[in-house]
Amino acid sequence: MPVAVGVIQTIGFPAILAASDAMVKAARVTLVYYDIAESGHFVVAIRGPISEVTPALDAGIKAAENVFGGEVVTHYIVPNPPENVVAVLPIEYTEVSEPFR
Image (tube, rainbow, N blue to C red; front, side, top):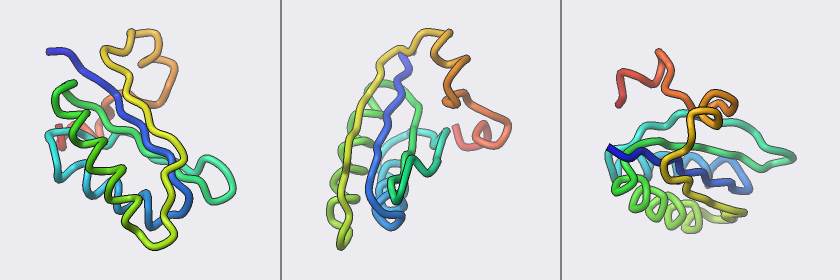
């Protein structure tokens, strides 16, 4: 099954929280990465089947933009990431995220 990675970067924690919540509720995806990007910017990454990541990312963008003061800086989907990308970037399924797949 083809797997994709979806990433959203927002300004403000409430926006990324709303985006994360909406994404995991909208489709069968797993949150695999979260971090502070820089000065109030936050990043979250999800993984799952390509057909699930696309609607999840759309729901996350919409939810983040509906938060007061929330702003989506950027978003991107990487369909079928190569193994070397998965090995280098922190987007692998881990022991912590595995039960939620």
